[in-house]
Amino acid sequence: MFYARMKKTIIAAMALGSWMLMPSCSKDFTTNAPYKPVTVVYGFLNAADTAQYIKIERAFQNGTDGDATVIAQNPDSLYYKNLDTKVQEITNGTVTNTFQLQEVNLNAEGYPKDSGTFATSSNIAYKFKAPINVDKTYRLVIVNPQSGETITAETPIISNDPTKFKFTFLFTSPTIPVNMADPTKTISPACIAPPNAKMFTMIMRFRYVEKNTNTGTSTAKYVDWIMADKVKTPTTAGGGVAKPANDVANNSFYEVLGNDIPVAGPGIERYVDSVEARYWAGGEVMSNYIDIASAQGGITNDQIKPNYTNLSGKLSLGLFNTRTLRTMRTTISAATIGTIKTDPRTAPLKFVGTVY
Image (tube, rainbow, N blue to C red; front, side, top):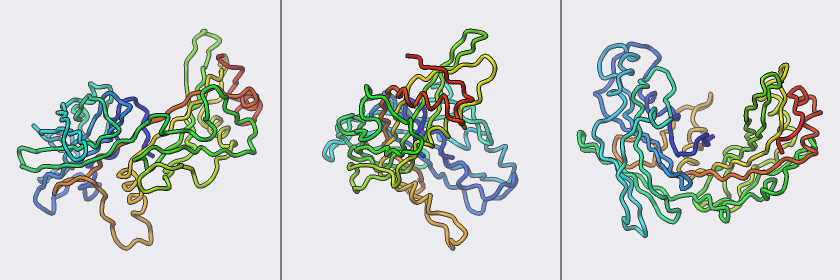
């Protein structure tokens, strides 16, 4: 799944390169080869965002005998110093704009790093703010002045323009309520894919308000139902209709609500707000990476397949690609609300009405 719950494009949770070169779970080990600075890059440009973030790290290697977990807490083991990083905007093969990337600490940007083995005080990424043109190609250029290495990668851009990225069923208009009242029926969460989009995650977000009748406080909440994941487009260049292999059962909607919303305690009432389509589209590089990662491993495999990367550079791994999010928010039908109130899986949730 390649969607993320944030407005700005940021790749902060792909395991990075930190685990790639650790040979075991032992805290003490000796490396089997001389140290080599392997660069790991993750960046996904999103035309819907005002700021773009790219993670650039060094794959963790314990260059000396010792406690690897202690060494991993040193930010110098994870990050480079004084990188020259930029993104070039390309029109018909010619560079027409260059955006210098700024080194930032993601903790200060509002994206704290998860706690764990590796250092969290320094959570470095590279940022630039510029409008992304969906008709252009973008090239990432990383120059390491210490090693002399240059790493590059290019990506086209996916548009979230509603005239190119269309919902074709279920979410057809923000003025038409979504009807999930009959649990025995199925739906197709299909869409018309924009150019350069190759893979989709299709989500229905159910929004509701929880009221505490004892205190009078109300809290807006939501749960996400992943209707379909890793849905491919039928054409090699993107575009066409992206449709899951099988339709989705309305019944799953009530299962998600019953499983993900806690049973209402004393003094708790809930009110239906709305439902929202949230379709994440990813590019060809992301699609290839997921296909290859899914193919690796298994009891019957007799070899390790190579990692996938679209970076050019001797000692580099990672992905530089595009993604975007298309949303549509609408109301939910009165019949569906009635079913939520009475279905055995959702009746204990105490939905008593709507906010509208």
